[in-house]
Length: 311
Length: 286
Image (cartoon, rainbow over all chains, first blue to last red; front, top):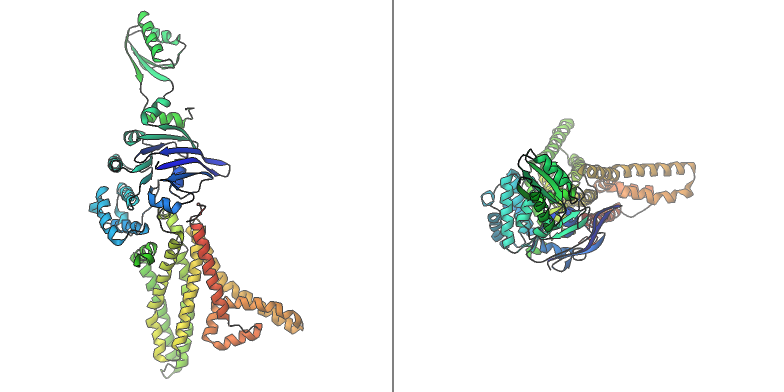
């Protein structure tokens, strides 16, 4: 097990930022951490990055405790915080050189690694440019290269795509896919959930410091689905259709979407849904379409941040 | 072998410092002040002597005033260089990344301190050509000169350590700057005030004939004089003053010993606190 979080709790006075978080990740897994602002994502990442001590519990990176062996853990992790600065008067290669030296790499090793890392993040052409002249997206990629300088087993990336334009996001995503193919264990938090769904093997949903769901993307969606939202399209007799569906006890929140369609929440099973459709056809309703609205991760996120009671 | 002693923070800081325009402008300002002073001093003394000669005794006076001026500049500049060492990293959001590297807290703190010390030493060395004028006219021994420079070094390392400590324990550079200048004012000014208060009280008691209460004041009065950079500088320039001080407070221990112990202690304590507090959010602080 590459990352093993056991009962991690962090309290600031009476406020509990992290509440008994337990989570395990195998080597090579890309884990997406989802949650609203202040849910506890950055606190978790700060503890894993050895920047913060937990009030109780512990976390292990490749068997090394972040509380008892922080120096060993630092060799194993590459950390990219959500907000970070750069040394303005250093050039891109000097920036990487400084951090390489900070991880104890020899001059010769750094000279080999720096061009490779700049190539990896598509910044070879900016090697001798001052860091403050780089765009936000380039700085993010340079910071990512910096977090890779000592070849860590685990990457902890806190909102790596925040503040980037769509093109820079795509570039960042491509780099992360490449890192995934290199077998790195990656923990990534983001609000851009469809992107997480695309590249993550597992998703964890955190709310008010508690991990409320954990699994692969499909499982999470299923877990958090709740009531189905069904859309029915009817020719002409929309009012009659509304009265018909209102009588069904499994249906709630009926809304007329336009003159031909209505939508409602349905908490019945698939078999119940078949029976409902059969009854509607027997009642001679001119239904020409019926479909279930799919919830994506964005909907899941919205449901969570509204305080939906899931899991 | 070299890798064992290399300090990435020190090298990075030196690179950044010597690339910054403010370092050169600061150095230029410092040398300009010294140049104006030396030129003015030479002009005034040659004019007043009437003969156009510059006597060795005048040369010693120039050395003494130049040393005090340089001390003042060092004490003024050191807090500015060190009080933002860690807090600026925090404000620029580069500290967290630095703390996740495998560098120890001691390495980071020492690197920060040494980079400032190196720059200050450069300033002192850059002023040497002006000092050399003193040797041209005579009146000052090389040992006196070296002693003064060692005194600068001890003082600037101690003030630098105070600056680094405040920079580590406070979140904002401005607060750290105020605290460091406050500490410096205490060491350079308030201690002198306490010394004079102590001496005055002793004199008053001596005049009223209440001599038996004199002794408890003396060690404290002596202590205030011992930790005051100005007092030590005066005793180094004018050894007779040291004897006078001893007779006032009744202690024969040279004040430079107390000064050295006190400032080394300050350095060690401040660096220890800074090292402990750098990773304040981690229990183990490694």
